[in-house]
Amino acid sequence: MSQPSSASAASAAPPGASGPRVPEAVHRRRWAVLGVLMLSLLIVVLDNSILNVAVKTIAAPAPTGIGATQSELEWAINSYTLVFAGLLFTSGLLGDRLGRKKVLLFGITVFGIGSALAALSGSPGELIAFRAVMGLGAAFVMPATLAVLMNVFERDEQPKAIGIWAGSVGLAIAIGPITGGILLEHFWWGSIFLINVPVVLVALALMMWLVPDSRDPRPGRIDIPGVLLSVVGLVLLVYGIIRGGELADFTDVTVLAPVLGGLAVLVLFVLHERRSDHPAIDMTYFKRPAFSAAVAAIALVFFALMGVTFFSAFYLQSVRGYSALQSGLLILPLAVAQMVFAPRARLVVERFGAKAVCTAGMLLVALGLAAFAFFDASTPVWAMEIVFFVQGAGMAHIMPPVTVAIMQALPREKAGSGSAINNTFRQVGGALGVAVLGSLLSSTYRGEIEGHLGGVPEALRATAGESVEATLAVAEKLGPAGRDLVAPAYDAFLDAMHVTALASAVIGLIGAAVVALFLPGRTPTGTAGAPGPGAAGPGAPGSGAAGSGSGGTSPGEASPGKAGPGEAGPGEAASGEARPGAVAAGTGPDGGAPRGSVPGPASEAGESARR
Image (tube, rainbow, N blue to C red; front, top):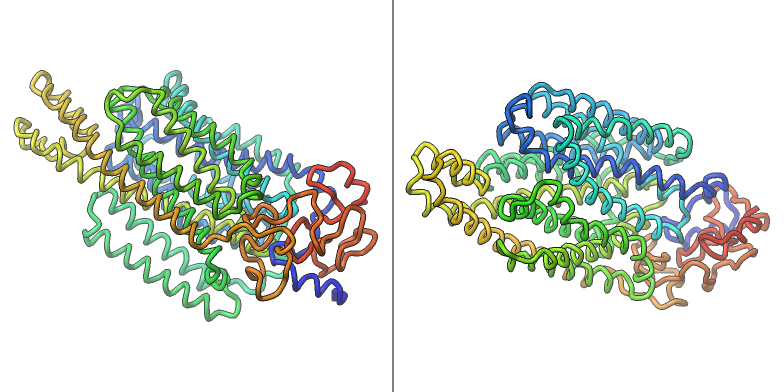
């Protein structure tokens, strides 16, 4: 049982700061662990970006491809998304209970096996099935990487580590299409999956060597009904969204039935969690405006951005005539901006607060999306590069702060649940973006091109109106008679892209309004530590955590109630040893740096103080 001083400190500290300190042996290798986590995340994110550039090759007849139809290609992508989104929440809970390292090892192993099987697929059906296996593995990898990060870094360094973690997504966005283009130019289509296998083997070896295991020490009973409801609800919802995107019609019964059914099951899930004495996730976190705003911001920004990513590929390759490799190179500025700015976003947040930074980031994303409404078939490359860079810079100033807000709102023991919430909303938002904005693109295009299909044989007319790719394919099949379709197809696509870009920009503006209204502003240093009801609430995002958007104490500063270098903080033993049940050493009411004996996150002088 903790002593009174520890108990009082614990009551003042946010849940995210509570719990024993990171063991010294783990703390010393924390950056190496982060590198392994980034490698694991890189494989998962890179896989989808590679597949997007390979769909044309896979659709070709054997031996070039496997003769997949448009519908089969969509399900090769969607089977992964469906399994991945449906199991994200469950995998996070299992990581908290069974151990995050075990879950991470399981996930990366399954992903590697699925990749090898997908590379050797002999038919579209096999590819769809093995992509689902890859989605299963990825669902256990992505939440675990963030959960492990929260358990190897102390609170004051978490914003920096999360920024670097988020920057690795930018790296994957950059090298995915480039890697895919290079592989397809020199090897067969299966190489885009087989390339994962050696990387997975390296990641497994490094994980077993470097990554420590962690789990919730008091997980309680598992909420089996809650877990089942979450899986069924998410699978039905995502399936309905995907189906709506396929049909470009969200009023069809095969779309409405799973969407409404999924929403109904998720409502039951929420009601069950609120009444359960051992809930899978504490629903009271969503009552905090800052937490809910951070979750909504993730969903909205990925809704807008994934829709644009969907149509920008057609714009670059179909309208502008760039190859898959050239298209990958053209979006490098977006990735570079994320890699450069994401690790530094915490510094801007410390100065201006999460509200100002995330609002500015959402406005930059909306500006970049709106710019597509002015692109045509002759837009200069330098203009496109600027727009991609602006979008990347906006993303880099949204994802790290909102991820910090979500993860630091939950106790460290529940890091898997926090990561699952973060990734589930991002995945569902992205799936909605592709489906809804893809449907808008498709319906607008069909309306524009129909008037030009009078000379097309009636048997091909419906197919020719599906997309710009379909129109160009029919035009090629018709030979000289189809030449008159090319220019109208480009014009119709550009008109559809402009409408979709403006719709995406509106979603971005809604996201900006949400974060401006509900994310916390900058809390002046010196008042952030004030405990009690007047604060943002225990564990509330931005309640004084360094870099979480409150303008709290930055690393290296001492705030009221925080121990200085070499001193014992409230409830901290003079020797620096953490007692069972004691709050993180040196944690003040502001939820600042829990390693109170360390003057700065990278200070070597603190090593002797910790000893």
